[in-house]
Length: 485
Image 1 (cartoon, one colour):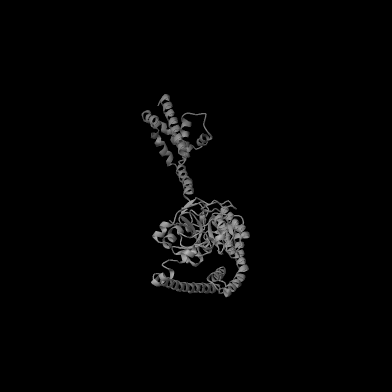
Image 2: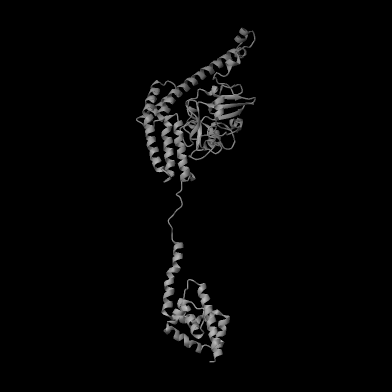
């Protein structure tokens, strides 16, 4: 072979070697160092190159591997090397020979764990780090803050029986806070404080309940005693005594109802007799064919003596302070317009459906517009308490739901209701007409948070900090507006 042919062949070898080296660089996973060394040594013997790395020098020391490479150029043909210029893929014969060497076999095998390592790390299941789910969507910091709010409210609670529940609610939020700050310690302290708060009042309330029960003579007095025992439920025989109060109260109501029925029968009989007498000839002879009766005498009675004294009237004749019967309930007239009356239920403590009812079924942020009590009043209560004709006379009221004046808690959207509750301002406005009410009952505004609702205490005071909306120990006093056309 001539020098020019040899040089051409050597040149092709160098080009093929460069092509193989580029392919090896592009695929890091297939790091075939032995292949590069073999091809680079061939180029180094056929045509010396000055710019070689330290790998070429190390390859020169391996004479056993270089000898087969020296014999190869003699077998190669220029025609066969042309495809190597056009198609780098034909340089694979060199790859196969170098792949037969043992070092080349071992290195790819050793690189397999390296290839699997990234995939293994990506597929492995890391330890779960998302925060544990908290009820109501509160994170630990928010739960801790909620608990602190309940602790702050403790100083403002006037009814001692509410304090244990308040501490238990605070403990619940501290538990939700988990490891945040000193939440665990605070939760234990609150539970302990709840027990101490209960022990502090339970005996005094029990003794007071027995005193009230022993001196009770009316249904209202027995109801007061029952509420006192309810505050210490589970203590000694408080539950049994509360049940006795209920039974005695019911017995008095039944006795009163019998007396009323008897009086009604007597009154009806008297009316029949009077009418019969008035139509008799004797009456005409006595009165000189003139009719006179109660109406003539009533015209001389001042209006101040007719109305506002708690007597029952027909809705069309009633004035503020009077009582009327509408539907299944008695009502106190708060306000009269030309063709309508604003009524507040009288005797709500007598009805099972209006005592012991929560503002909302669950403890969560809520307002009057969204609470379950509003839904019940304008749904089941309205449907069951009135006939279809009476429901048509109940007028919808535009209810403005104010914010909390002390804490600034938002009162929510205004509503249009057929049945609603008083607000704090309305209670103060009509206090003279309803001052006989002495029980804890809900009003519409929120407390110091939207998880609390305001109420009027048995001491006749509006409590702006409110109480948990899910508490079912409060009375409900519905308010309606009816047409008297």
